[in-house]
Amino acid sequence: MAALLNAQGQQVDYLKNASDPVSMRSRITTDIESYFYFDESQFYALRPAYYYGLKNERFLIGMSIPVVHNVFKGDYQGFENTTGMGDLRMTAYYVPYFKETFSGLERVTATLDVSAPTGEYQLGRGAGAWMYRPGVVLTYRPGPALAFYPEVRYLFSTEDVNSQGGSDGSPDPDDSEKDDKLQNLSIALPFVAQLEDWNGWFSLNLMYSHALIEKTDYFFVRSDFGKMLGDRTAASLRISKYIAGQPRLNVLVQANFTWFMR
Image (cartoon, rainbow, N blue to C red; front, side, top):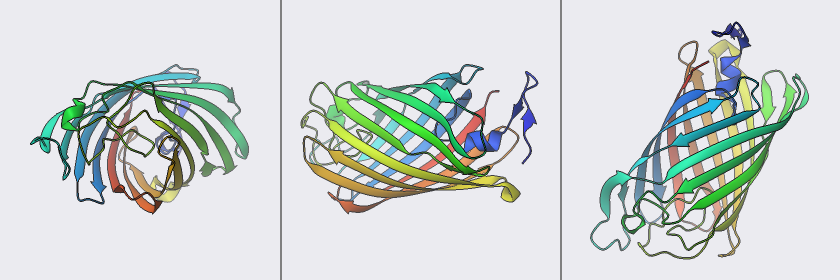
């Protein structure tokens, strides 16, 4: 799909931005998430978010406030099936290096996610402590419609949390008690192919996470299928599947809807 003109008269490739996991453009998103654990526990989240990016595409901030529903098989003291607000998440991206190119290293993005303990951890709706996840994402293009986004992120907390393993601090399905501090290192290698004729994209992502305190490993593979529904509106389906390591989270299914504001 050809690039479109935005309100400022700039050419914008919205398909490229919709398939970019670290897009710097202002947008409103909604994620619908379903977590399925090996012990048959289930965790659902509706996560609306707003992201504001500067026009020079060097800095972006965002915030999401989820509503979550859990169906846990573990010991949550009679509250194994509840609905309420989850942990608020704040996001910041900064681009120290950018070069418009059809081949080679295009961009370096520094990222920071901060989660505030707004969800009730004793009901399984939050971690019960502040969590921080700095990281670095590279954008490397072997061709105009192809891109790799290798990333390294480090999730940690300064207090004990009700969360075990993984790279996002999702709740512990076994019980409502705080376990320990989080120190998780994660590495991912997403590959994205834009399908111009279909006005969509496909992505394959290999993900590895190591819990430093627990000394456990998690390997997942994620596939994304996305499509532009209008000039500035996109939808995608993401499926993450456990393949090796400590068996806790089995499958994560996410439906995403994005509307670009400019």
